[in-house]
Length: 161
Image 1: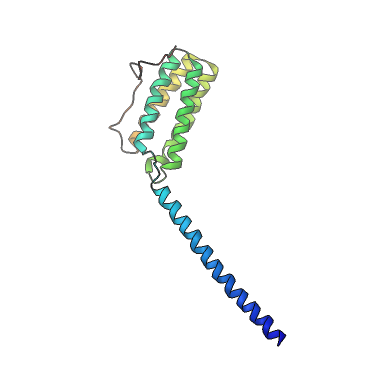
Image 2: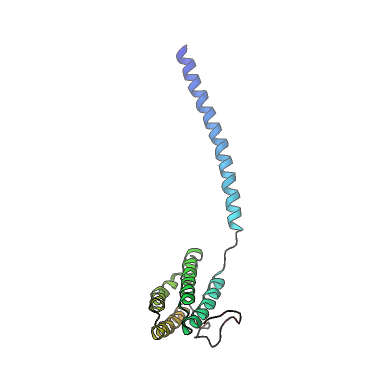
């Protein structure tokens, strides 16, 4: 008789535990669904916004380097590198995202020129950077969107000297 009660107790405990797990699972699934909905509605910059950011930093980098403001140039090159990392993180579905890695060695060259505070090396590496941007644009069928060395600062309210 004791065995029957023990067996019955085990079976009832198992059924109760399964029921509690079912309630827990339902609660967890509701939390997951809620978080997925929030995530789906979270703002994510588009590819064009990342590219616009790089274009601004590209121009600011030029004027910082031309004025030998190496701290600002270092800041701008870092911003460009961060933006490229963000593209590869957030824009994985874009074919263009796979190509932005071609800029990393060129950016290392610009960064090296900044660290050496070498104006001639900065200019040549910056020209290579600009040409590599355009090569990437051609490789991704955005050849209509060419960049160049800027003629004037992008902002009139920033000091580049």
